[in-house]
Image (cartoon, rainbow, N blue to C red; front, side, top):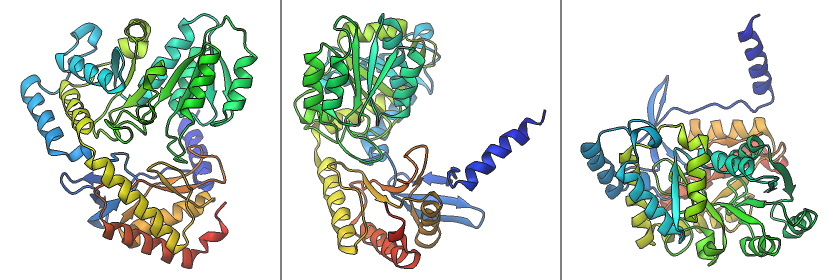
Length: 404
């Protein structure tokens, strides 16, 4: 059997549908973010990155870089294996204590990515708690969906951010079964923020555990960067808070925080923790430095909010439709996969602007978009250049006809 032909047929269909993913070859430049070098056949040129999840530019912060370099000199480049086999490195424990303090929890547990922490924690909880029912927001990330699926627990999907629907579904379940309400704080594609207080109150009413994914909020919201739950004074009422080190903190890795018993339970039963190589100690040291810095400094968050507001105001002035939300994520809706890809290519080719088109299955068909994430390091000139480019495209390409 010609397996390559089978692969190619499906890839060809993906391309025909406009949903094939092309990856730009970029080289981040330390000290110059959001600029990056774009490598291509014609040569190398600088572009401005507008879709990075390094939301605050902490991936190039001098203190974070220094911490990683010092740790490499001190410990070497790798962890040596799993924490179960090679031992828990001191830097891992220091970082877990920093994370527990960030969210006001007893304990924390590190993973190799935010995807892995969601997949592992939810699959372990759902499989180890007898007759568990996981109530999942309809907008939850793929990592949460996969974790729930792998757990083989009963899954109930509630309408996105709809607390009334959540309560109806909780009320329909037997009182004596373990229930987990799983949701996010900031949803990465629409940028909307969950009604956390109302969700927590309903979950408490029915004795359900709350599982909150704060990956697009940690570092960015709250007086110390503890996320929306910290900003709203609700962290102490949430059973498990999950986050990432690979976005606002500028490094890599994921984590969960909660009670000592909860974290020990996941540590002891989760194959996604037990059988995978641990994060390099240097990564842990850099992440701890980044978290500690953002606990004390609000300058990055303040500057980012200013640039987000400026971009939204300039888009409004130019008549470029964008999805309204309370977060730092600015989706410009296109509504057609081929046109979205075409616009992204044109921005890159003619304007040296890099933004990845967001198509199905990341978002539903018909809601394709360009997703912009202004950082504190985007200048006013960067914003003006972007909006000028979009104005030209809107005039040339009749984009307004495609906007949903």
